[in-house]
Image (cartoon, rainbow, N blue to C red):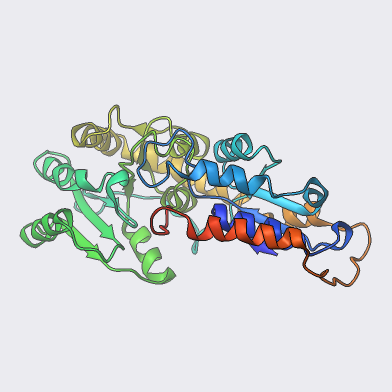
Length: 333
């Protein structure tokens, strides 16, 4: 049984569900984390997470841990959750390996490169900086075109500014839509340099799906300092172009450095994509999982036991976890 992108309520639910089985008859369970744990995170959305995670972790009986794999795709995130939950957690190969073979990014025939901002945009991702970054880049001598994407359906003043900017300047494309995998791959294919102007502290122990896909496709990046994205770029792209402070001017300067060194960064990114695919992907994830989840003997037929009075108490605890969360469920990648 796989439970990915679990939050505290789902984590607690799995612990309670396992109690319906005898320990030697329990199915093997894999639980993946990728949202911020809330520890040391300067975010109004995550500050209340840690107490709920700690409560959920205490519901896991040690007799079930032999058939439970708790994992993340990044060693820093693994350390974060291990510290918070006081449970064994492993770093697994990332599932994503790209839809197409990676290619070398090159300047267009007119000498320009396309600088892209992709994904579900919000303030902690620096969305509010993008209009000013765009104006600064358009006013500079650097040969860039801008591809700005937002899959959020919520309109806001920032989107209104970008809409106006794209209508006034042919060097700016503003794409506002969600889409399937082919649409997303088209955005990646159009991107020569991906900029992630994210808040550094928020992403110190939290990953980025966009960064993972950029590395897998061999696309150079501009990333926040001290983040999982910086470590990812250093590991697979040989270096990381980072901004010094979290503001539009610093991000623009970092983009200009990346554009000036584009050919070097592009070659390193292409080589890193090949290396990434040697170490990650669904096949490697499954191979690693099967080594961990191998039973010494064929597991017996599973017959859930009758609920006990303790289960009734645990159900009430779970209800408090599920319905007592302050605020809506949000996607955090």
